[in-house]
Image (cartoon, rainbow, N blue to C red):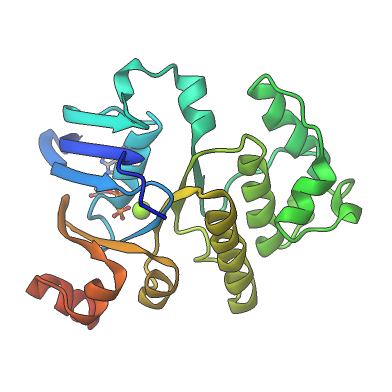
Length: 245
Ligand code: ADP
Ligand code: MG
């Protein structure tokens, strides 16, 4: 199949400043990149390099200060925020749960978005949870179960683009594998585009079609995952992959 030429997200010289101790500092520094549609792009880089900030710009949790972002072919400034957030969903580590049952958590998020939850059991099963959990208190779930519930809530909106911010970093190895498999299957069957931040190089290598390296607010390397790990263009990438950064 021919790849879809329209990128899911396009960043064009995107800059974001934060002010800290009275000084303005560029946290993202002229980022230019295309997120390929239907693919998984893994985003790696040292802590504090701007990865989470880049994801926050994609569903307007934050606005950029300079440059343009296009989402699904439309300038981000022209999107209605609720619609944008239905299509571009952010999931992060330890997503907070509402007090109440698993079912309540699923339904409430749905109501916020003004639609009706048709099949909570089907949704749970998609993320590897069972129907007997529906009436259990969300806050009593294990870490792995909570992370899956967070995914289920997100999937209820059938997003086109998933932004995943270190979602497996607090999980045990078995849960990590299960969550990876679930997302890989979603990407394969439904063509969901993903930007997946991870600090595990092995995970980036396992799940990524493309891998990007961010250092100090700049994308240093953007290439297919095999090239990224086997024959990167930049010495920073070699050092980062070798754990020498
Ligand atoms: P990463 O996800 O790669 O660890 P972040 O995007 O979270 O990096 O942060 C990049 C930089 O921006 C860090 O130096 C961080 O301290 C700073 N930063 C993040 N959010 C804010 C904020 N709301 N206000 C000020 N500085 C921030
Ligand atoms: Mg982060």
